[in-house]
Image (cartoon, rainbow, N blue to C red; front, side, top):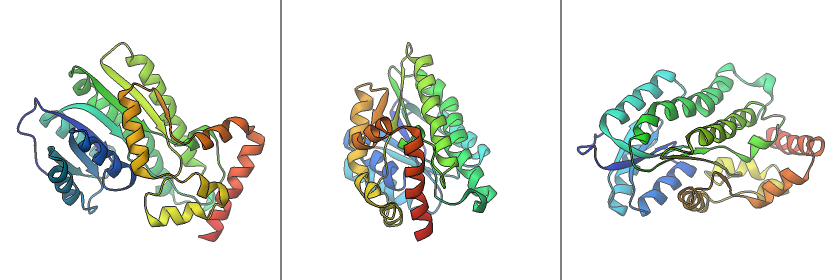
Length: 266
């Protein structure tokens, strides 16, 4: 990893930056001439991506490889960023989920979802907030999910973790609304982040295929809405409408059956 030589330059931090929506966020920000700090797991070709984005869009890019499911790693990342960079944008994009019977889930599977989606998002926001507040205008964008608005069988922990992200973001927005830090949350639907995820979602049937989104389009829309100060960014209007129109006693078994079909067909 390389370090900034000029702390006066402003940078955006993007977690989960090596693929999917995080990679799309990184490219979209670079197109807008925003310098980047890319964060991802080791062995994800992050150094190559950082160099490619920097060369293509003529912005400064730095990278940091770590596992954010470990609290100590989140603190070390925060300390490194605060020591070397001035940050005016944080995108908490890193997250994980999956579909399986709860009884079959490994303890580490459950713990990692909670640690990454809930704990890392909270701690990184907390640790970088003084840095963000020291700039003239800053933003935090947390990536939640449409799943935040409905419990789902065979995905029991993931929707609960994303409900936390949504609630946390709304509360933090209210707390900071009179400061220079604007907080937003995006609730995207399923995305074509890679072939495996696309195939898994398509097994959910008609509604799964209908709600699949392109990460690049989601990223562009989200960044535009963030800078327009949209506090809750809803990307998929069809999914949002369905969640509002269908009562929970219909929605819960309907969505659970779709995920069960995915689990059985895996």
